[in-house]
Length: 139
Ligand code: TYD
Image (cartoon, rainbow, N blue to C red; front, top):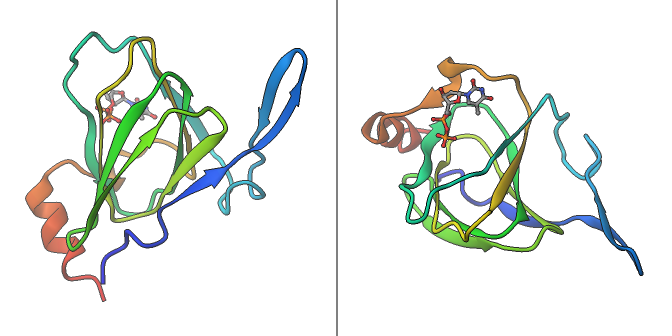
């Protein structure tokens, strides 16, 4: 019931030396899916409205706070949970049929997203009621 269960934090490979830290994401190794798209969000104004506020029919993603931090609220129509992402060495896996809201961005945050598919507007639920209706009738 609901698709929130597979959503989880993933600790990324990190190489630390006196020069700083190098983090690695390998498509199909760090992520269970092949990465077909990378996008990133930055330049949020102070007290900006939330981002996201949508669900996906099939898309899988890993969200990383590459700089700064922000909260990610998840909702599968039955359960809700929230994560604070503020470590560049940690990613949040979000699977299909989960409504997500990104908010409370610290100044100068960069939200890096690794995605399993190219951009397809038809994969989105932008309407929460339509999302709820379908999410609650999943087998
Ligand atoms: P939008 O989906 O509104 O962002 P959010 O993740 O906060 O809901 O995307 C903003 C704009 O960028 C919108 O016009 C769609 C476009 N866009 C692309 O063209 N390609 C992409 O891969 C993404 C994620 C968005």
